[in-house]
Length: 262
Image (tube, rainbow, N blue to C red; front, side, top):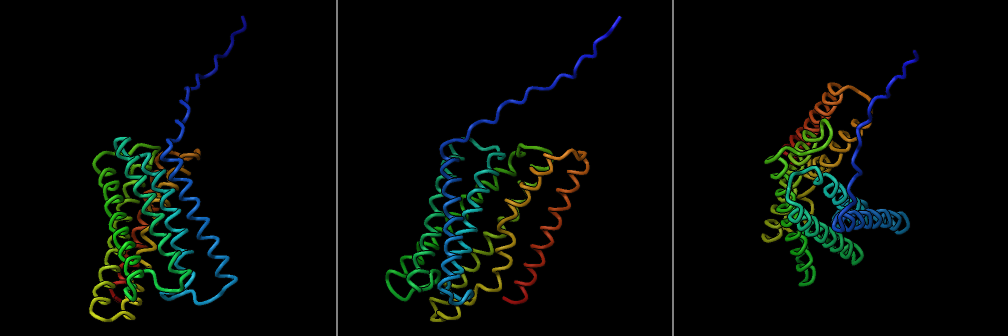
């Protein structure tokens, strides 16, 4: 008698829920900020001028790219954080609006050919500078709330994602702290009449700030990519752990360099 081999049952995978309107808005806004950074790179290529210094096309380029990527990353990564939907939506909208304000103010001042941060030369420049400083404070509050939420309850996601999300947010807090330190020192120097020194005082902390800013994108992205492979759970977990260790080492090195040169 001929027997038929039964096929293994394939578990039904529920369809991925569609993006919420706020998530679509944040991703689109992030993409526009990235586009703005790319366009200003073309402006720099045509117009020239210095790449470094308080007045250069570097600032709208790097801030547009950085804020855009961070907004897209936070929108995606927080989908793994166990936080109430309405609060996540509210925080994301505030974060997106703040990103636009930050990049907009920096871009405006670049086109005016004046420094964007720590510039108290005129009433308008002071208003822009203070707006950027307050916006930086809003960023710190929003991202810290997301970071706290990621540690209060274990994030969801594939193997390695909880560690990647928590580590990414922990390293992001280093970026926020270094950014706040740059602003604080620059304001003190400005208020005491050392305007030129204020513009250059942020240089030692920039590598630390830049390296630690994007861990929240790099580490979860790695965990997600590993989940698409057929590697064993042990290997995937070790790769994520190794990546976290390497990233943390890079942050420590940048921190030591900042401490020695600041």
